[in-house]
Length: 142
Image (cartoon, rainbow, N blue to C red; front, top):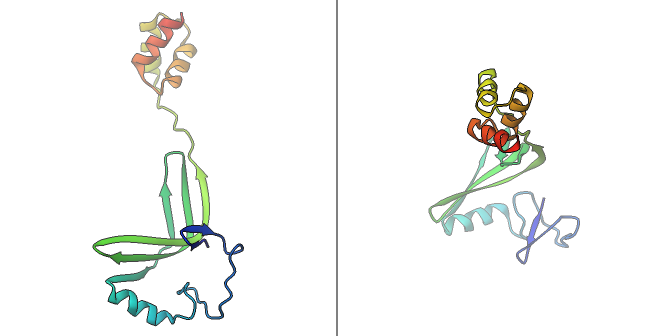
């Protein structure tokens, strides 16, 4: 679990605090968690635990999956943010293959003047299923 120290994120192994009172709920030395919660509420900051089984962050190239997460919703000054901690997995997304029909292949082959349907299919795959781009590609390559 990363720790913010002077605006920099450091790992727990790097920064080992010397104070004796430290709980999971409170990352401040010698502060009672109930006292911290009251201080936060007095400043208009409320936090609530959310019971979640999994958190998924979908990216363009990969997804980040957090199993058995500890999720805390923090409401402050009219905005809501979430703090998530747990075991993290990164999953690469497979490139989606374009759905290419035989009709598309025959149209590209016919319009481009290519007799080999495999070349037409390959051009469609390279252009992501774009028929016009595949025809132009084959005409310029022939």
